[in-house]
Amino acid sequence: MPRNTKSKTRTTQASAREALDPIAAFNGAAAETFVRTCQAYTNGATTMNAEMMSFMNNHLNSGIEFTQAMSKCENWAGVVDVQQK
Image (cartoon, rainbow, N blue to C red; front, top):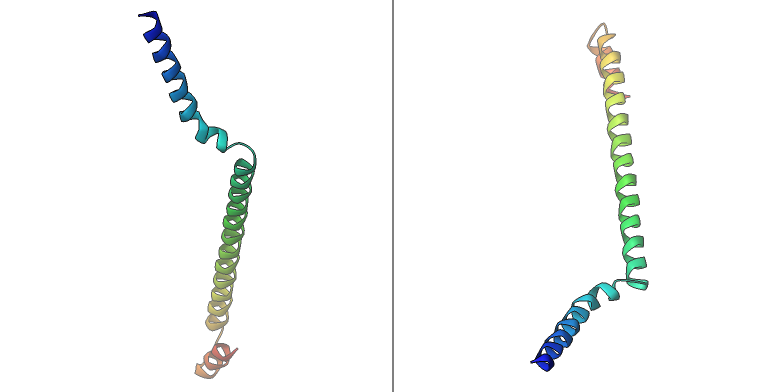
């Protein structure tokens, strides 16, 4: 019986080692690549967010300026002039 126990223990240890191999493969170059990819994604998402916010801010400001200019028009000729700018 003691031999069976050792055999089962060795089999269990071998199975545990095999289960850890994917984790071991993630060390080194793969982990470095993963980290760089995550950083690039984060930088891209941050840049995209900044660009979208800048676009929306510019669009909103131009709408405000247009509305203010329209409100100062005294006649339709003034409105046409504001629209053509």
